[in-house]
Amino acid sequence: DRPFFTLAPSLTVNEDIYTAAPYRSSAILSGVSTGAANEGSQSLAFSLVLVDGASDLLVSAAIEESGGVWRLVFQTVSQKSGHVTYTVTAADDGGVDRGGEDTSRAFNWTLYVAA
Image (cartoon, rainbow, N blue to C red; front, side):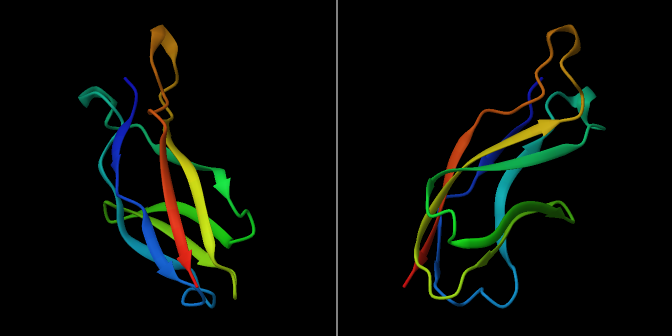
C-alpha cells in the first residue's frame, strides 16, 4: 500500500527572521503512515520538489521527523521575499513487489516569505 499523510496549510514568515539559522516549523505533516498495518516497520523519506517560485529564496528546505513530529526545516536568504511552492511526496522502502505501491499521492505546499 502507498504511504499517506495530511499536509498542513501554507506558511507565511517574515523576511530575514530565519536567515541566521534554520527554522523548524510546527508540525507540517499529520496522519503520517507507511500504509497498511503490516508495513509499519518500513521507513519513509519525504521529497520536496520545487514547482513554482524563486529557487534562490531559501538556503535549504527539508522535512524531518523528531519524536513523531514531522516538520519543515528551512533557512531563508537575507533581503529576499516571495514564495516557493513544492510538490511533497513520501516514499517507503518496501518496494513494489507483487503490485505494491511505495510512493504517496503528491501534494503542493507553499511557503510565503513576506517583505
